Image (cartoon, rainbow, N blue to C red; front, side, top):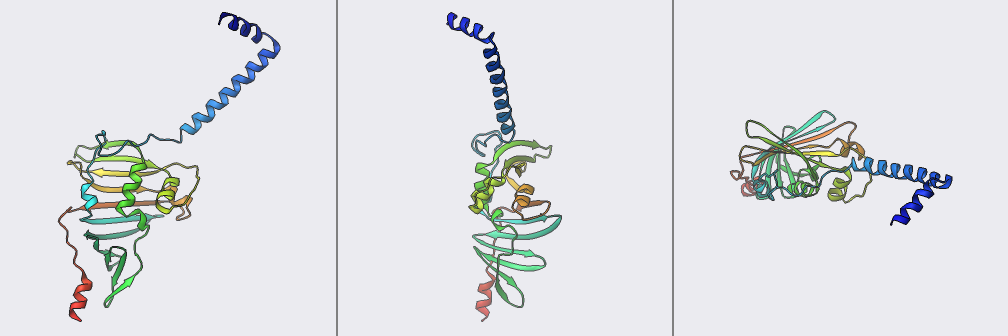
Length: 237
């Protein structure tokens, strides 16, 4: 070992040795800069929510899909608001002063009678609970903010590439600032709001010019019933 170090010391004093060490140092320096820059674009993986982690919150009520809700979609500053209730795969809601009824993947609008219609939701795939949970599982936990009222916001980061792959089955390779998912829970740690800040997703996919935000508020868990208005129409016939 001593002889090897002696030979290295003699070599580094030669013109050739000095040149190799000089360029070798700068090569290592630029490799370090490259990896450091790319590390700035990565985020801590979320170990899990509701799995014994410090950012625990309860989502069973959302999984049961029995609640009243208000969805506010703000697209380039324009608001689209849906208010209604959901239970057992059925939902009844108001949008744009029209009354709608949903039976799983089928939708009806009340005009003079109930008429079948296209899905009236903007960005419906991002409003589905299974999509929300799938994205949370792969999102990166960033931080949380607690308030005196007992409310807590849990902030998660997720890339447009991940959303495209998981929700739309589309491969993309964007360099971007990530999107944010904010989970809000009350003093009992029950989730009552999910907010999406999706500017990158929206702009990079050509869905908007400036911004996209989705606020999903929930209430009255387990106390909701949705009647089928189509059955009422059939009974009168």
